[in-house]
Image 1: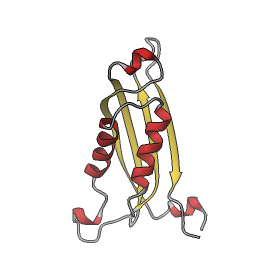
Image 2 (image 1 turned 180 degrees about the horizontal axis):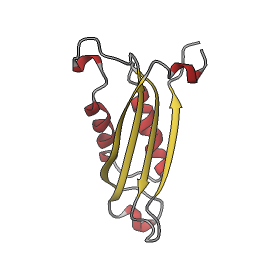
Image 3 (image 1 turned 120 degrees about the vertical axis):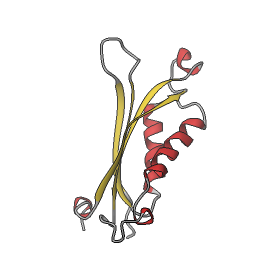
Length: 128
């Protein structure tokens, strides 16, 4: 089965605009104080539909939020790419997550644009 076909029986759950204060950046002034970072996460999960309308049948949103908050709390990060990759690896470790998209953006970098950011998408590795 090709990777795209794996998404056909998935449900997408998402976390949008989680605002965190992170020590992130490569410039000296960014290393001294936290700045706002907005995080979006999309998870493609299977099975797609719960049979009993029970939280134990789905991926709980708390799992995603807690992962992001834990990573940011661990300490300084130089690159948004690193933050995205760390979050992505963590969410793909959940057995029901087949693929994920993670994006981060820093809204306060430039006064003349909404934000600067990074986005990554990846499928869960399949056993061969």
